[in-house]
Length: 435
Ligand SMILES: Cc1cc2nc3c(=O)[nH]c(=O)nc-3n(C[C@H](O)[C@H](O)[C@H](O)COP(=O)(O)O)c2cc1C
Ligand code: SF4
Image (cartoon, rainbow, N blue to C red; front, side):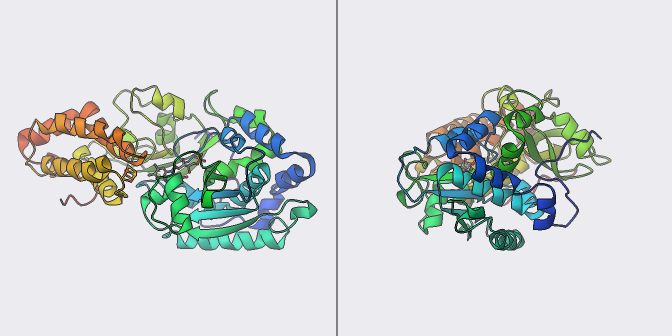
């Protein structure tokens, strides 16, 4: 198996959290000290910009650019949020990251706060991540006791406090604007006009980044932008990436690899290939709101640009790879995802609130022997209508449906022709298929 430099999961040991002592032994908090001593906030932003760091929460927006949107004369207070809501089915990289290395996320948050002159931050975490919150809270206490957090950090003029905040427990709370409302104690409708960098939490400038994005920041500041860029496999994929793999592979789990590593290498080498008796059919490359990778793309580089080149609607997402084998029914799997999305719709806009249950019903009928050929164009047009919804939730929900009817439509035809799920006698699609 090819071994690569580990950056944020360095010194990982099964079931253990890297202590403050171990983190410091590996030069942890050196970047913070250097930044406070030697760099202006503008220089920090420039280094992050030059590194090419892309947001790891799903959209891949350049982090340095996001930080630079926060105008120098913007009002105070300003806020920094680590988005650790992670509720998308199949996604578990942030849980692993924070459990192993909470201090790199904390150091990243403090450096971000210095770059944008924020004095207060929130660690927004999925409520079912009880244990992770405990780990993070302990690390926060350690950082505070050692002078890395609080008033006049390391004797500088910069002060910063972080509070953990439990999410309200719905998927939409992870969407940045929904998150703002959730954190304020309001309904998490993502109905905020304009940029959060101007008007975010309580109407003040706010930076929201995924926990993994923040985790790379100290390493970029310590080793330089050029070093970070070189870690990736291609120009458009700077740095490392935490990929997670689930499904019938021999070694499901979380792997820190160069960004842009091929799907084949991730599955065959790092995840150990398929379990005996199972053959790879496809995968969702980056969580439930990405599109099934079509046949013939097993060697695709796993990064934002390469995935988007497969064709319209293809996205990299979060790098949470969900593998489907030949015995798994994709109609059933897609139905399972749509059941999740229908339930999680925040209900604010009509296409999503009304359209997703409709799509769910059509898929349920196909899966349960009541399908008709005319359902296929109906599924297509309903899914396309999701683009008219208010936020990215609904088009994301429709993405696996479009993948199913465009790249794996033969499975849908088979269900309709046989008036049953042809996979039922083999192995199963995932989850319950109730209406
Ligand atoms: C429905 C929905 C749920 C989301 N959930 C998360 C989440 O749990 N964690 C996350 O970091 N980003 C999530 N995002 C993306 C955020 O809106 C935002 O783009 C991200 O936190 C920005 O951080 P980044 O620039 O570091 O990627 C979600 C987006 C949508 C549409
Ligand atoms: S698309 Fe769905 S989740 Fe987004 S605002 Fe509309 S109803 Fe809410």
